[in-house]
Image (cartoon, rainbow, N blue to C red; front, side, top):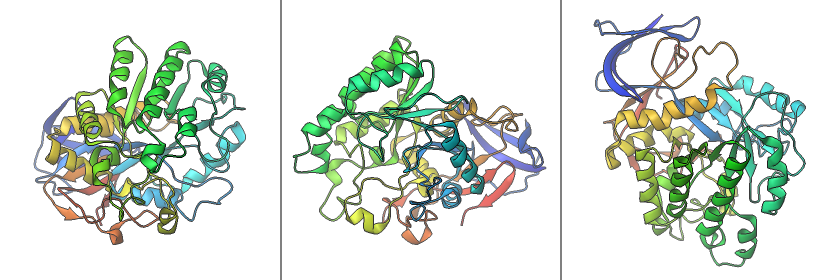
Length: 413
């Protein structure tokens, strides 16, 4: 039995408590009043339900052609370093999980990960739903392989087969992207209107086909009111925000960092960034999800889009608290409770009531933060195989001290 005492932050409140985790079942056995007996000294720290990152790219598939960037073992090491206890991996691999056989092949590879991995299945022009219950991802614009669509009409024909399923959308309109190819900068080639137009269509599809929808890595202020209106009329839609769209904006781009900070969708303006932060605080945006996209240093210098974030997930949460006044309960909501609700319906047996809350019967995976431990982010400390971070050189106000996976303690290092 692992016993911890200290300040607990769930999505619905903070309290002092003693937590007992059964290390055999991996589940929380009890939550009660403190009695002065703890296996770890957690004074000055906050105990959260285990953080979940529901949008990552681990790179590993049956073809093994991209494991030089990341694999399930190294993505697990980066996740633990960042206080992340469960992840959901995207399907845009060279050997994409689009049918039962490929999905099972990829699922077997996740055995090398210490953190739990949920796999999305891919939606493409020729795909159909799997027999098993899984989340899906639709890339409305260009992606790896053939998992994307050239027009709204083509996308709707396929989505009609997925009625009632859980589908996440990468919202960039392919027609607008083609029209913008000649613009001088990456940011102008992927304009905000491409995301807003795609958002409108994604919301239409979610409502028409009764999907459980999610909008990935949202970046534009202009689309937030459309999401709000859809939620108000009962559309089953949620939205993610990434650390890079919350921390950086296009006013921070220089000739020196422009390639490092290239991603899809790109960085937006300061107003977009601040609007996203407020939407996350108010609950209009539901998750901090990293879009962890590991690429080598050489690839970044060639202009490939994507940045890694798993190593700094928990540390970034302390930035939201220190710089933007997020309460621990708000952090628990967007980093643990909502991600837990997303993955819990896909969990196999043995995970009790699932992830997302510190209460008896839930998974005994926790994230423990010291919110007052400023530190400089250094490349040498990263566990991701690609070995770098967009936060290098920035001082974050706090850090992960322990990641606990089903009762197993991983101290920060």
